[in-house]
Length: 300
Figure (cartoon, rainbow, N blue to C red):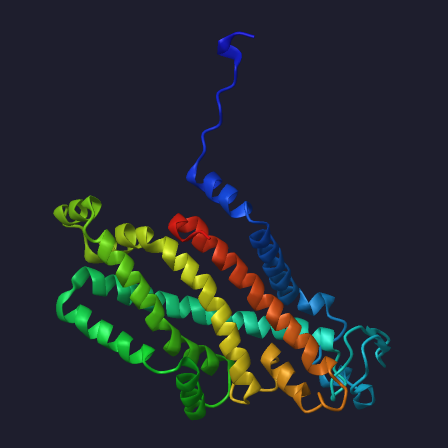
């Protein structure tokens, strides 16, 4: 075979390199698979759940606190048992994942957008604007997140949107501090000086030139903050200040069965707790691997 017919080696693009490095960890792939399963289960809950656990026409109080594997009055098997209201626990978990993931992802997106914008502005403008924003960040981070969220919900009351608002208030400061630290380094690069010499609009410099170079740490912190937001929502719902009883979440399901733990009906709280643990663990595993791939100096 002549040299002219030998196929040239395929060039390794940054995306291919990223995929190869991420896939090098079997634990990260396991976490990614778990996260995909959790998301698909939440999105398809209406089709795969045996019942709608919050449709009163499908509930029967006689099916209350049935052990796992019992036959329900609706003609299906409650593989994870039922709660005190006769709701199938498997169905409750599938519907609860919708609220928990929706609150976690929604609050992380909004807090990330606000915090990233303020962080970029603080690093680029500097001066009094930087000092003011960072003093607000210091003030926000000086209080425990759960305490601030409890105070906000005590004033606003229960509700999914109120929980999202409370989580945005307690999470935006972390994005601001991390993005500002990264942007301060990028601020001194040659491409930033070239953009300023061309007299480009400020918003174009911030979001077209500065933001893309701040994305690696932002992606990592975004995945970790989703898991944190889900945990905070579950805690608030468990304490009775989160989502209302008509909007199921994993934290609310755990709280519903807490009073029956000592009577032997462990499954009412146990299985939602396992689902919550698996969802948070899978997200954290993906975030840890992203951190190692995007910043090799932090590899374990």
